[in-house]
Each structure stands twice: as C-alpha cells, then as structure tokens.
Image (cartoon, rainbow, N blue to C red; front, side, top):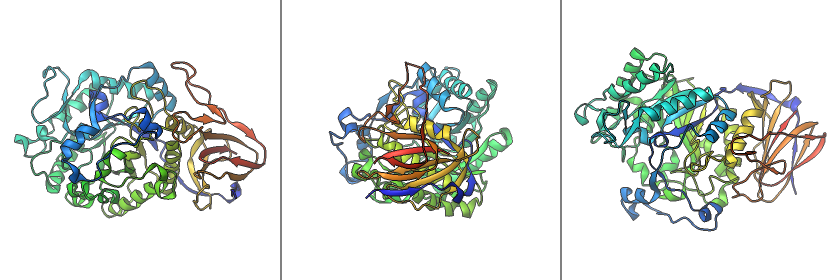
Length: 497
C-alpha cells in the first residue's frame, strides 16, 4: 500500500527565516595548493560492483600506515576553468570556506622566497597566484570568504610556544591589497584532532585556549571586519563507535572552557557517518541503510549533541556546520551518485527547520562527495539537486504538521521567486513503494534516476546535463492539475503552489 500525503497549505505555520547563505560550500586548502587528498574510488566501487577493502579497527595497523592507502597526491583544481566558473556562478553568491585539515599546516609564500621548499614546521605552501585564484573565484561569484588559519609548529614561538600572527598577517594584508576582505575566520580546523597535523608537541586544550585567544585578540585589534567563528569541532558520538579515533580527540567542551574570548558564531562539523575507508575511525552505515530513517536523521543527532554546548557558552548565537557531507574521509563510495541527492535535500530541509544557521557542503570540486568531479569539473547529481533547492525554496520555513516517516518526508517554504504561494519538498525514501500525494494545482519538479548508484539524475524524466561544455540547461517544472500525484520510490519532488 502506498503512502498517502495531503498537501494542505492552509495548515502551514511559519517557524523561522533561514540565513540567505544557508547553502554554502568548502574548497579545501589542498584544492588550492595541490597535495594529498582522499584516494578516488574505482568506477566499480562507485557502482557497487566491487567492495571497498577496509580496515575494521585502528589496531589493524598504525594510523600513519592506514592513511597511506586512503590518501594520495592530487593536483590543485583550476578555479579559472570556464566550466567550474559557469557552475559556480549559476549557483550564485554564497560563503566559500577555504579551510580543511590541510590549512592547519600550510605556509603562505606570497613573494616566492621559499622557491617551493616547504619551511620547517609546515607541510604545504600556498602561493600568491593560488590565493589570487581563490580571491578571483569569490569575487566573480559574488561570494563571501571564510578561512581557518595555520596552527602547526611553524607558527609557534620556538616551535612549541605561543601562537604567532605573522602568517595570518600575510593572508589578511594581501587580501586587503586586492580590495577584498576575509569575512569570517575560524582558528584552526577541527582543533579537537590532535594527531597528524604537525601541532606543537603534547598540544593540549589549554594550549589551544591560549592560542585561540591570541588570535581573537589580534583579529579584533587589526581586522574587526572579520567575524570570529568557532570551535568547528568534530567529536560527535559517531567517533566513539570504533573506539579508535575517540582516543585521539579533545572534547568540544574541554576546548570551550579554556577560551576566554567568545566568538560571534558557533560552528561544528557534521558528517552522516565515516566512509568505508575510515571505518576504523568511527560509525559507518552500509549502502543498504543509505535511505533509512536512521541514516537520514543523523544530521539532527549532531545538532542536538552540540546545541547544549552552544547554549552553555554562546547562548542564542547562530549554529553553523562548517563541514558536512555523507561521510567523513572523503565520502562513501556512493557519494557521487543519485542516492546522495536524497540525503542532501533531506539534510538541508531538516537543518533549516530546526536552526537559522549555515551549512557548508564539503566539497565543491574534490573527493567522492564533491559537487563537481575534480578531473572534469562536470556536475554530479547532488549539484543539480542543490541548485534546484537554491532556486525554488525561499527563506521562510513552515511546519507542515507532517510526521517524518518512510515515504513521506514533507517540508515547506516560501517561494524563492518572491511570488505568493509555497514551495513544498516531498521525499519518498522508500526503496519499493510509491507515495500518493494529493495536491492543489501546482508546478512539479521530480528528481529521479534509473538506479540509485547512477551518476546521472533526471528532472521530470529527462537527464540533467550541461547543454555543451559551459552552457546551463533550463530547469523547468511541469504543470500538475489538482488531484492525485504519484511520487515514485527513491525520489525528491519540489512543488510550487
């Protein structure tokens, strides 16, 4: 028996208004500089025909050895490439976060004095040309800029003392010299991770609190235009499942207790799980569960985990998720396929229903979870779903009075085009059953695919793709008369009323 859903706009109750930048994204520092990143999956692993070999426990081998198999050297992405610019401009102005764990150990060489030789205490080099590309990309897309700064041994007095602002000054000064500004900053990406980041020896929560306050004071005195964000931690309950990575983490609350200068925005990281290659680090969901209520609801578990910490130290401040995707460690094998559009849209809808923050997808163009393929810059299914959400769902969020259940995840917004009426999002996450939706006259946009792990997505039965190398297709809906509308299994539907 199919699920029956009644669309009744007269029953909607306004809940909140979302941040206009709620859909933002990350460009990892290693995408700018080139360097190690997550090893690409094979086509057979993506399609599910080949199992990914995993290490089930941390004790199977040392962390350093494990990382060698799941990361590899990759070139920098080309932010001037016409296709990447076309797709970014089509998405529109947002907040671009240039960060990631690689940013923690990156040296800024804007005058070329290193000649490519990485200074002691760092692992990577960001050149002036690379940072100029990042600035130009943000400028052309009309986007704001967010960064996290280095905190490796190279930015500490004598390698182990207090944090020094010299490197940060280079980044801010050059940005200002180009007539631009850094709008937001976090001090160090994922400060609760104390391994593998070239931190000073025996770096502690006390050390981080001291250094964070030094950065916050420097920022306030020299760049009051930059909003301080923190703590961007990732110590969710999922990390305790395997027992390995949790032992290498500091708790968010331990960090917050030791910082005396409070930021303006609270941030954290939220991944639905850990990917196949990182199972030794924490909870992993198999592909058989990627449409389950447990899998789709994981983002709310993280929100509720961090909310009490926010309430204790920074009551009423916005909550930002400065990294989010299907899975940490580069995404699951199915991250680049159609099935992830269901998770992404559901995550955005739930997040906007419960907070007025911003959620940064990781990443724009790298890893299995990138919206674009890092080699071709062609859009993946999730890009098209994200673009449709951005163009149709307005800032006003409503309570639909519908309980979330299999086959019926129902959300409602104002219309993005400013016209009177509503934008509904209906997700049928059932693998087998249709959902029957009773609707008033409307315009429908139904996203489906021929199979869940397809790298193509269809809008109202037609494949979405660039018309040519750099020309966007028109995202058109179809008229739907009042009455019964059938929503197929494994589908996402936007309707405009």
